[in-house]
Amino acid sequence: MLNWGQAIFLAILQGVSELFPVSSLGHTVILPAILGWQGVEKQPTYVPFVVMLHIGTAFALVWFYRDRWVGVVEAFVVSAVRGKLQHTPQEHLAWLLFFGTIPAGVIGAVLEHPLKQLFATPLVAGIFLIVNGAIMLLTERLREQQTHSKRDFDIEGTNLLRRLADLNWRDAVKVGGAQAFALLPGISRSGVTICAGLLSRLDHEDAANYAFMLATPIILAAGLLEVPTLIEAGGVTLLKAVAGGIIAAVTAYLSVRFLTRYFRVGRLHPFAYYCVVIGLIGIIFAVVRGG
Image (cartoon, rainbow, N blue to C red):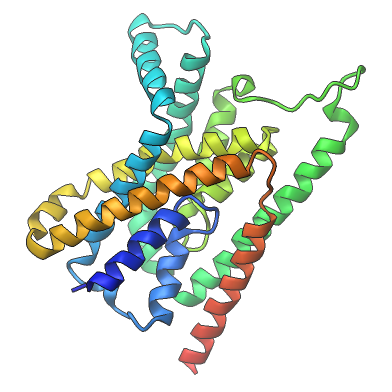
């Protein structure tokens, strides 16, 4: 069984790495191996525990964006019943989230288990963490070129960067579909989604907010689908899972609060360099252990 120290560590790790663009899956593959917790993910108590961590993270996101989610859900239901859009900001965002969630949801349902079984090793996670860092650095480079390109300005010099209200359903599918790459250990859900948003000419703040809201249904659904497993575990496992979920929720709330402020002026570079370093550590560990 997971001990309390491991449970608390994994809960904090989930709450931070799920939202920071550094890959929670990559970290949960590499760090337990480095700490000598090999096989912990194979324990029957592990899956129920992780389920609650995901639920805690999702509820933190729901609470942080609670005002937006109330408006979005109401607008979605009203527009669906009406059968047409009135193009209000809430309705537009609701349908952007709907179309953006479909690709990752479908792909995840089909490929999540086989991909994790195939790639969930420290060596592969390390490689993909480096790839994740490279994607963010390349995106920032391309974004910088976009921002300073003449085609981004009209004849009066007005910046033509887009806001969420300017995206259409095709943009939503492209940005939301990027989440599917997070099925690979080391590729960050928030990182690739923010990158896709930036390449759609959103600013960093809008790209981050859209990424976090897009992640909420996926993370919540992944957790709720496994609730029966959690209930069956019962006993001490349930107690640790609930405690872990609360810790993950608090940590995730603090993380998203920090990141939404950071991306008003900050960029992806620090997270990219961090991913490269952790990826190299994972690769070195795997090679040394294999030798």
